[in-house]
Length: 451
Ligand code: NDP
Image (cartoon, rainbow, N blue to C red):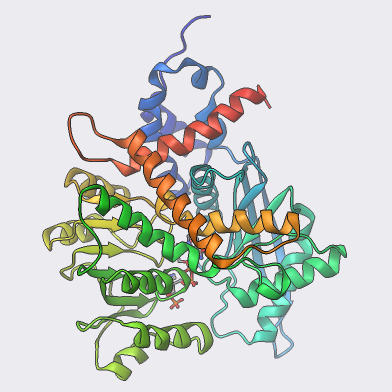
């Protein structure tokens, strides 16, 4: 058979942008993967012949739907719902739901694409998907959130199933929303099946699902440091976000003897030089999860600095854990971190560093764990929640804690295997994660032929 042309990155990206105009986040996510994968597959003909990269970057299907609901004053409101089922080559579609005003098709497609590689890295049988809505949970009553979730599920339930597609939470979708969504799914289908993860422990949830993403992000950092003979103990850490991932990343950093000096939300960030210890973190958990307040209240309570509208990345630190949202670290901020002594970055949020920032971190040989590796702990425990639901049992917490630790170590080691820079001790974890995530999905697609 004639040898096919190696994949040309620029041509591939030009075509992708023409086919998917005005989707900046999606272009960014695909470029980050393609920049490594095009090179890797240059002498692996089968991936060209089967057009694997093009096929992974074209979602299996996208569902977009209207969500009508009634607010507390009786007014009719309209939002848009999405589910992007990107690829189910290695297992049922799996990926969270995000409720936030910034949700649009580009954001959904970037997240579903990323999820495909992340899920592959966990070693568990899960395909990649993502969904959500431009619905803003902020300022809504519990009843309004419930009515929205019920209406959202009226359409979404047709596309779900324990062996088909299993959503979970993400920004704006926590325990409350998962409860409403699962309750409506059960009502509509008359089935009690493991069709959502992140469920409450009373109705099929798994121990440590809530903690898993944040813990996993810190384990990834611990593994990167340990490989070079270092550790988290005594390190000054910047954390962004104050939601699920940020809270448990902070908790784990504290367990390991690090000192977290910042947390943030969409209003700004707090800088507490003394460190956000367990008691102060409990205040933040109550503030953000129960009272749904703003982080400036923390500054008032503890006399810490509050910076409205800002990001913490200009502060001196040893380690950074971006755990809020995409593109929160630009090139300038990456350079400030490097200048100020940061030696490691572990991405709890999805794609929090832009492409230029990533290039700078890698060039400066910062230990940089990209989100698809660093925040895979959450979906890994979700995968194990699916296994527990299928078997109709609940495993012990200690067993899951151990499995999470092992899975994160396995992801770290796969990144090293594919990302070690020859002639150097440095590991390019971005390259390692991209290639390790790609190969498993690609090989399954090759096995299926043209489908
Ligand atoms: P939460 O909704 O629990 O928390 C999000 C936090 O980020 C909040 O503090 C929020 O502030 C802040 N935030 C959200 N949007 C912005 C913005 N545009 N600018 C500044 N701050 C913002 O979400 P999670 O903690 O679950 O998710 C955080 C990140 O981690 C996301 O990128 C998500 O995709 C990723 N992730 C989450 C997983 C999980 O298991 N939950 C799994 C893997 C990845 P405010 O309170 O003011 O809204």
